[in-house]
Length: 298
Length: 302
Figure 1 (cartoon, chains in turn cyan, brown):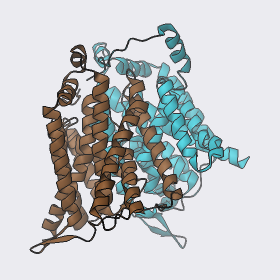
Figure 2 (cartoon, chains in turn purple, orange; figure 1 turned 60 degrees about the vertical axis):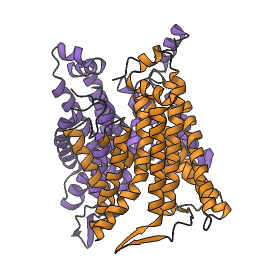
Figure 3 (cartoon, each protein chain N blue to C red; figure 1 turned 120 degrees about the vertical axis):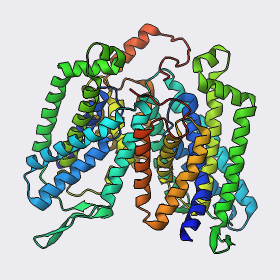
Figure 4 (cartoon, rainbow over the protein chains, first blue to last red; figure 1 turned 45 degrees about the vertical axis):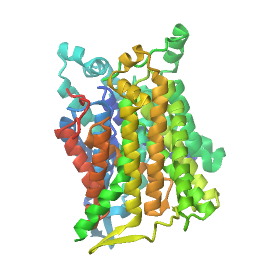
């Protein structure tokens, strides 16, 4: 039972990560910076909670605010670039954050123990404050928030930008505000998730937040589907449970995991959430003409 | 003096980075997609070369080292075509995200597979496998400056490969087709260029170069790990963005530049700072001059 519960808790945390990636996806931006914000959230919350005795909620909100501000600062210059360039800039951001924490020490003796981030050794001894009730609460709140957001004017504007930026601008949508806003919003969500993760596992190290996690966070969205917020939620849950279902493969389970991700991405480009759309579209088209991808070339 | 030594070593070793980045940028130029599995290709090729060297006793023989190099290159080329077939060919009309995900999945598969390979194949060891070569002990003294023989060999081989590539792209029929597709895919297609064939050729060539890079990196550091690809991939990222995406000659120059920056920082400050400096440089370039230093294509701007 405890084992199943721990899987469910990890699912909840990964859903938060997936939703934070999806937040920038809503405006058609492809960001790998979420891992950077995730680790900033984990460290900030950890420091506030462990070293200065803040309550969890206050620490989470402060981390979220901090990341939102960083998100605005990073997001604004990043607006000039798009697509692959943005992906690279955000990779650079995440890596800089990782290297920063690799060289960051802030150790304070508390009650006979020296606590705090210790560079490459990581940050050990964060009090465990996040358990399933907190995760469940955050999960439900975020789901509600995204469900509302998607139906709201903001969500519609985001969708318009994703479909056609020029058309969206022509219909009076403030593209700059939307993009930077969603980037900062995604950063804040990632910070909350990271803070909860830190106070859940109680020890984090810079190596937890490498390029690998950035790829996994994109897998969540791609495997689940990036058209509605349900997609990333499904993707995160499926990909969190998957390694445990693949235990029979022993040492090779991560190989199998990769093969499954590959198969889903190739067969269902719209993700699990879009299986039905993909299937019905295929049934209608039958044999698509073999033309090169001319339209989406920049 | 130390600074000059670092700069020269960096310049010579940077040639491997140039090779990594050339393959990466070549694929981007033709398909307009990033191949995340490029790093894994490098890693697998390095393992293939190391296997030959370990099996045949490459510690002393230059002939075996040459054979290992050849095996790495061929492995790279075959793997490249495989990656194209699995991760790129089925997604002709999909969103740009799709090939990113599929190639990242291929990278994950190969990485995890070679963690197991390094554990179970007796020639390799689980964490760091060695790549023996007769170059390890050769050192040149130029006045007060020490230069490792391995670096010189790396630089020469890389320079030859780049010259060959230059000839192939500018002079051969396939090279012309590649440039046509790069310039305007639809037009090239209408003119009867077999785009599929061009893509396969580019993947094979780019990955063969990656294989060469894998072998050279393995020889110069003496060790290989299943995770070496990810780091080289990130360095490749930095270089091709600095150079401007799709710019092959820019990638050559920026590879050397990045090598020099890295070695100097490792020598003067600390090894852990080198990535931070590189990524800060990258970020700055992206924000100030998104099209890169040697721009060929226009970066997408608002």
